[in-house]
Image: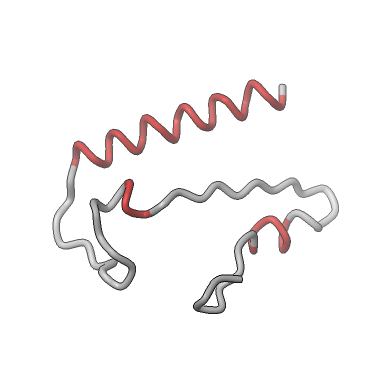
Length: 71
């Protein structure tokens, strides 16, 4: 639990305990996909296509790596 009372791993703890359900939670610092902002400045007023594409490429690599580990 962090200083604001938020707990991590909710998706995994909630759905991962269900019968016949596997869960994985991937967290990424939001500044990597909505520019360099501080918590509390979440409103996105403009789209940064380059930053979005970079993030998309990183996530594809993550899922490719996960796929190689589970197959």
